[in-house]
Image (cartoon, rainbow, N blue to C red; front, side):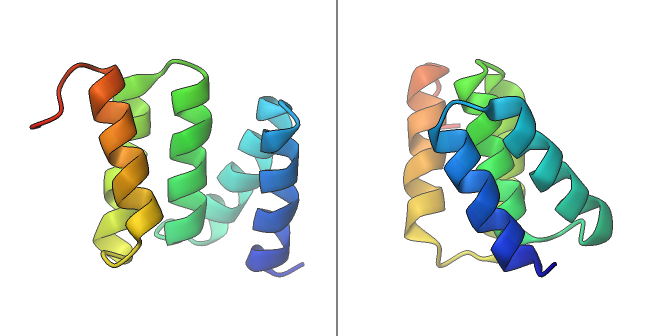
Length: 89
């Protein structure tokens, strides 16, 4: 199955609160494509939802290295940094 289709499936799971199931999909995609920007971004959001802020910041930052024009990822990175009380990091 294509990565984009799996990402959509994982997003739906994530929105439904099924973080572990979404995590498995994103992790599987990254196992095949370690620099997949959407998988990095959304796995970062899973980590954020789990309160794992350092990992969330790292993953979203990595996604932005691959897709620097992703405004949503920049916004999410800001949200993570505000939560971590480090907005200027």
